[in-house]
Length: 352
Ligand code: G3H
Ligand code: 13P
Ligand code: ZN
Image 1: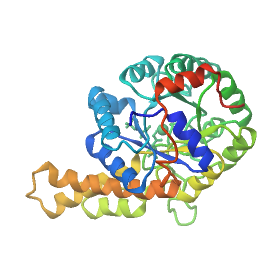
Image 2: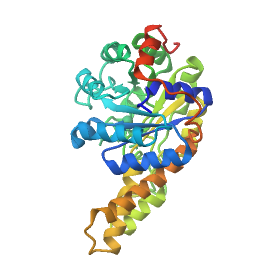
Image 3: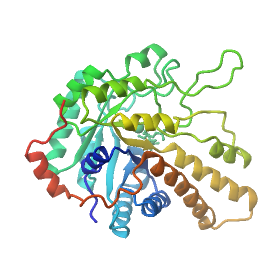
Image 4: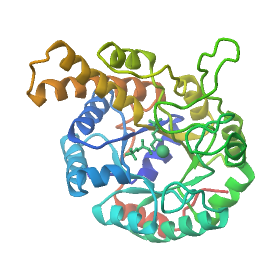
């Protein structure tokens, strides 16, 4: 099966009422682990690469690995997605590489740090859509900036700034209408990485889970039932994975991720793409640390990258089951980018 446009995967997920994990990759072991999990559970899947991942893998290696994934498992719909594209140039590079979907993250400037104005975001995202849709490529945009509510954790914003950068449901409608995006990443208080909250219990001093504005998702879904929402920063940071790292010499402080129940609540309210990177990093690191700790004489990379691949697969298996995509790989005939070109040429857009 050729790599499929992400828009089709999301449209089908909306029809079936489930979410689809979008897993970040940097190397062969991650891609193989995702595909083994997708194959065993019959799940459509989104494989995504950040700018950092493309740099690390020097573009062509990751592209070829993703193509290999689609070739090895022809019955599994796989979308190849650019995560957090920072400029039209990066989006162009990904499209030229054969990505079937791109994120134009116009919520931030090209440095990937400084918040853009709403107008700048609309402008650059609309241009990305104009570039991608005639080629059949899906576009994800982002409105609002990631960061923890109350503590500003994650985006380097203060608590007040974070509150101001949550996605406004009214503006979301306008943004989707003005840009023509296929999917909308929303800011509801999640943040990237393993440390998603700095909130502490005032009495015990213990770290508390991140506070999320799920009501924003509910409201956007009410206003735009057709809108495919994307939850970034959706790793659950399972305690048991952090414990393994620490048991074998790591030093990770106590931390919380996003509870699966919250993601599932999002999925019942229009979230169709769930971004997970950190959980696979944790599984990978724990497995490698364990081998190094138990067999300090080991020096064959296969002896620790193999267990790392198995551990990451364990995470993906749990996520695809929890998000509901399991069992849906054969629900539909996959479209090609050529097919999608025609769909877009007919003026098909998310209703806003
Ligand atoms: O967007 C965040 C993802 O976890 C990618 O992280 O930029 O370190 O590859 P990265
Ligand atoms: P996590 O760091 O929570 O895995 O989020 C990943 C992400 O949102 C990638 O875009
Ligand atoms: Zn993200």
